Length: 381
Image (tube, rainbow, N blue to C red; front, top):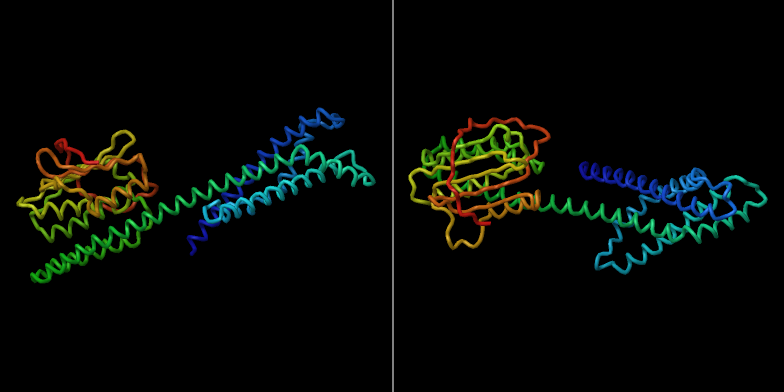
């Protein structure tokens, strides 16, 4: 609730700032228009641009007070299919009222500016109100439309951001139970085998992983933190598979503080381990290479297992969710490819925009070994 209130206050402040800037621009625009009109009337002696600005700025300062109402109408009457006719009617009426109120404010302001006499005040107001209606009314109605379109665009952007957050939350909710279910199955197997020490270690490691997975609220974390999380996961797998699992890392130092999607690497490694260990190889070697190439962070994970089935038509949950998360976060700027190596085994390659994390989390990364040259794979997009 507190977080929702924070975002609501931030959105209200943003709308107020945007509305104030828009009203200032409208004041300058209409001041120029009024100045041009005055040059063709008997008010030429008062027809300086500064005079026109003094006439319009107070009225648009007043109209800035209407900005929160316009923003509310933009969020409420959105021209969705179920309320399109009602939205159109509400906004037409609102535009007319907006223009009428502003024209009255302009007439009052013009009446009070020199030369002013109380006796002729009402007649002057009527005169200037008619002039305002003739020259400014349609502009004010269009100004309402411009403000409405701007706030509807901002509202649409807010909805897209909220939808992206909701989708990522749903995707992570699918990933975490999948991983924990497999780990608990491993614990059950070890318990039946009487390996009490191994059960204790896995449960302890699993507790650490659950604490991080359940409390991590950010969509991106520093790579070093993601690798520390991955190391806990690999420790669990080493208890399960012992010397059969060999993992080597080649990680460029300049990438350790790069931002990556949280819990991104674990489902890929889980996919590798579960499928590779089902093969006939005595030792499963997994290579993790992370490097920077220009503006991209490249991650390549390969193994010497049986590879992807040739007739496989659907991605597993780990690959499918990872692809969906990357698309939500980076759109067309990400790359996600997987395929079988020509020398045997499978490979997954990821490319995302390189940008440094705002805050570097604590965590250690095992010393990376350099010089691995993975064979070229046949990629499946």
